Length: 136
Ligand SMILES: [Zn+2]
Ligand SMILES: [Zn+2]
Image 1: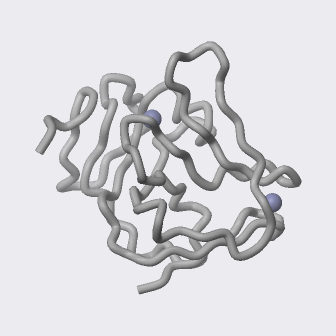
Image 2 (image 1 turned 30 degrees about the vertical axis):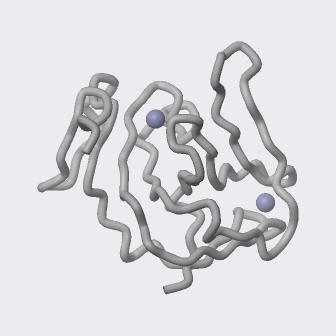
């Protein structure tokens, strides 16, 4: 199945094909900055299955971290679309809010719940972890 999405202003658009590796809610401090306060809702997909269909994203990396994430966003409206994360080589972590159709999203795992706030309500049945789940 091919999924599509875009930034808020429409300068950027993308497509990707499944499979979806995981469906996440991340409560970490960094994600709270980037989401506006709530947990970040993301899917993990293979970078090889992803393509920009319109525009070229801007990137941001912190220069004070040893292995910073590469964040892709729209230079015009600022929408943060996806992240390349050194602990997940070959994968992209994509923001669910940028999908044209996000009705299928069903978080399986809540991570970094050590930073979870009382106003972060978890859907029932979501496995939650203080940090990351143990490696499979
Ligand atoms: Zn935009
Ligand atoms: Zn996070």
